[in-house]
Image (cartoon, rainbow, N blue to C red; front, side, top):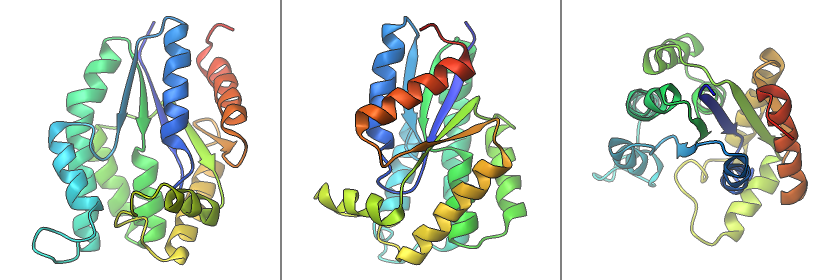
Length: 213
């Protein structure tokens, strides 16, 4: 069995963490070797980069510039691809990854308004052109997702604290990406119950990855 890269995407509070855990347990019950990882923060270096990216401000109390943010995400991704994704795919494992290149397009491209050609170039450099085999887009209204995050009572990170207009631009980015790459990105209604969402995800994986029933 060859390795597969399965990415989970969506706006804040869409339910990626819960669905990835349920999906991992289901795949393991089928005898599949699974690795669960995330961006940013899927490597030791990435943990430090995640802190810089998601805390309210940098260690010096200065805001992270938008292009700096983009470059930090690219650095995290480059390390992640080389250290985690490529070796585990070569070993035939199924990787469940919380965010990948589409996040950069949605957040830094649509959300921040940064140059899309630059983003695509950096994504290609960081990934060595490694694409997901399948991307699950958990689609929820941004207000619903942010309300979920607020109910967690763990505090909002730097990205989650952005204005609602930013999050709506990100959501638009995901919608346009899904329309542009229908064979790779599959939309799932993330407003459904946790159990219903998981059933949909399992059926999608069965069809796209030819898994046993």
